[in-house]
Length: 260
Image (cartoon, rainbow, N blue to C red; front, side, top):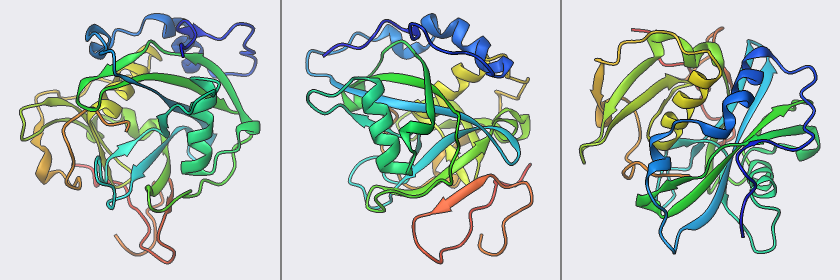
C-alpha cells in the first residue's frame, strides 16, 4: 500500500480557493518538517489525517478534534481527524475522508481534496502518516462521531491559531519541547502542533510570536497524555469562540483560552 507523490493532486480544481491555500499547495510537495528526516520502520502502520480548511462564521478555519479521555493512549489530545488505513482502502485520501466522517461527521461529498503532504514517520506510535489537505466546499454542522473515541470537534479560526497571544512552546516531562497553540479551550501540541506550525508557515500566515515562552505541559491545561507522536467553562460561549461541539449532551460549552 503506497500513497501518491506529495503535492497537489493531478487535475485538482483550485478555482475559488483563498490565497493562503494556494500558497500552501505551491509548497505542499516539500514542506520542511522535522519528522521527514526520521526513517520509517518496516512495521510502520500506514495512516492519514485530514487537514480540512473552510470558511466559517469567523472567517477561514480548520477542523480539529479532541480525543476522548477514555482512550488507552493519546487520551484528551487535540488532533486532526485521522487514523490507520483499512485493507483495500483508497489510501491516503479515502482513509482521511473516512476517518473525518467517523470522528467528526464530515460528509465527503462536500469536501474537495487538494493535495497530500510528504509522509511523516512518528516513531513513538510507529505510524507513517500522510496529511491530506482539503477545502470544505459545502460546510455542515460539525458533530462528535463516536464519543468513545472523540470528546469534541472544533472549527478553529485561523485568526486564533496565528494570534501571537495564543502561541507558545511546551516542555513535556520526557524532555520534548515544541510549538503549541492555546485555542478552543485546548492546548494543541506534539505532532498536530508541529504540523499546524509548518502548514501555517507555508501558507504565509505565520505572525511573529515569542518562542521563548516555554510552559510545562502539565500546567497548561492539557489532559494527561503520552509523549508526542499521536495521530493520533461553563456558561455561554464567548463571542470570539470557535464553533465547538461537545460529545456529552448538555455539557458545558467550550471557551477559548484566555489571552495573556
